Image (cartoon, rainbow, N blue to C red; front, side, top):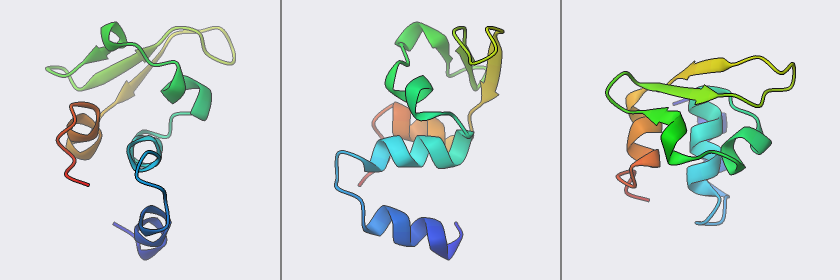
Length: 77
């Protein structure tokens, strides 16, 4: 993880760390993260599907292990 991201996370309030972590690891927008529903996540395939995007087209976002663990509550903050 780049030092800038480590510094950012170290200075986040605890409630923000999962949001920032998912943003950094997926490139999702704040509104996409805050509006995320469980049925949009496929942990087996490692994909988050966003249906209400800025340009009104479906967007599939790959999840790395860090994003998966964070969304599943296994990040260990």
